[in-house]
Image (cartoon, rainbow, N blue to C red; front, side, top):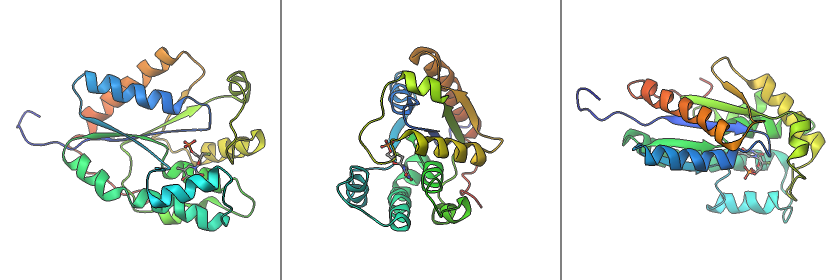
Length: 212
Ligand code: FDM
């Protein structure tokens, strides 16, 4: 900045249901921001590379059954085990583009019978609060045109509808809700603008804690 002091990076989260194009868009954001000279790191939750992430992966691949409460806590623990690294990077001025976060955690578990949003939020209270949350929406018709769901747990139409309803209920005013039913290039251009604006706006702002 103008005073030559180190400014922090931004925490930017991209959320959405399966097949909204999140992962493609996140990789493009990393490429485009990096080539424009920004310091950016891509992260994704669940992070399947850790021991906890391996347990989550086996659960999602239906290789292992885990109690619904326990797996919810594993997803949350998988975020907490990355917090110190995230804070360090942000402090060093690197912005993080995060593919799914606690909002997926809440919306997916709360789509199960017997779970409510308030219980689901508890273990993620206090995580670093994103500077921007983008929520990619896709109508069920537009989603159907993108082909079949994969083989993983949760990849069924009825369940995805409940997840989408939960996202709609969780959305706060500050969320940027974007219709993903457009070309990869047009969607990317919109997201790039949002990221650049966020990095500019939040560099001298404090980093808050989630749901506090
Ligand atoms: N998912 C993801 C959850 O159920 N809870 C969470 O906290 C997170 C981060 O895991 F169905 C679900 C969402 C999705 C599945 O995600 C795997 P990816 O993005 O397809 O790897």
